[in-house]
Length: 185
Image (cartoon, rainbow, N blue to C red; front, side):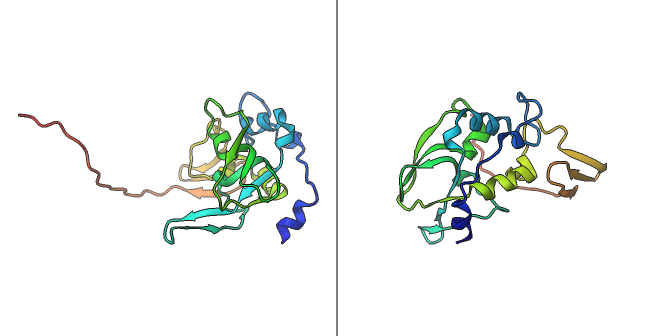
């Protein structure tokens, strides 16, 4: 109910608040997101598809949007094509940040029959303004992140974007996999 109530306030992002210092290089904020939103003023709303396939039950379930644990594959800049629509015109945020040949292109995404879009514009942008590209998480390498961390010592660091502190641990990771090997006669 809170998301629906907040969505009605027609939140509009101020692009200056998410503009990288150098438009050719991402910093706390993504140059790809900024460029897409600047070039596509009609697709600045953010929608979350609450439907998710649950492999255990083998059916679709509804998952509420969690601003602290965002699934970027189910977030879109754009507009659903009508009330109760199963498609959305705009850009999937995950495909935008990953880049590639059509990263700045707008598409019409045909979602599944269980898709249910909710407007999360305000929640998304408030979190993005606060922590920037940390919205992707810390587990991944992010381009242009050379100045992302301040190293307190060789085993401790602090993120300059969101303030999260981390420490270095040594972990032993082992795995077994099948490998095809050439038969030698």
